[in-house]
Length: 305
Image (cartoon, one colour):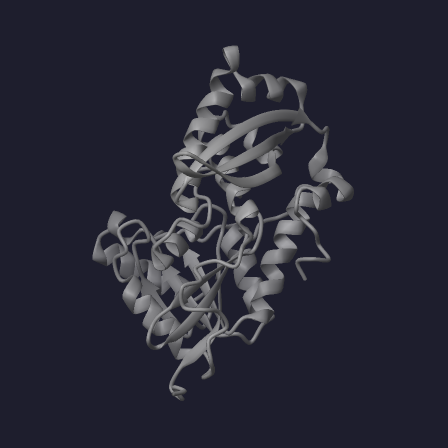
């Protein structure tokens, strides 16, 4: 029997790089889908994850952080983020609990003036401030934009995320679900695996390398052996300089081995089976400024429209 009170729609998470968008989405969904790292700009594609309950279904788009572009990859990320503002039913603007409003926040506020989509201000990391400080933050942001709702949360602990879900549903249209209720992501598994490998590389490597790396899945095959199913994955980490290649591989291959071990552990949890992961490293100079290479590594402007 059809439920006429069922709601389903799209929500997007925006905010400066590194305010906790991916952490919040992973907490809401209850699974690790978006890569998280303490380095900015870790999310490169608009990741679609799905939250389903008795009340309805929310499809989340986790956008790359809105920032000023430095190269063609940067342009791709900014365009993807800004385009989602017009496509969704509700926007979640995630900020940190500080009264300092920087150029990044001013830029986002300007973007929000161009759209009519409802905006919920989500103040993250509330576990790090006192209540009086939080009230000052709310007051500061109220002067910046006319928000439909303001919801303080802690993405790390999950505090008040249930209230956030209720507020999102307020702005979704009535209608049937888009995806089966057991769907948590509409990302291809190869893309999730590539992102997990990239996350582990980000966590292990020095500051100057991470933004200049991409991960390409060369092969992804499942087979059975005496102990059960196993997935063989061959992947290549792409970097921009020969010196970076040496750092990624490490002395005696130690760094590459560490990245591979950490990634395999996460991939096995996602696939729920044993994984045989082989990693290679290749240099593609200035790939972030090459349209052809960007497309080759999964950042296709046409496909993402």
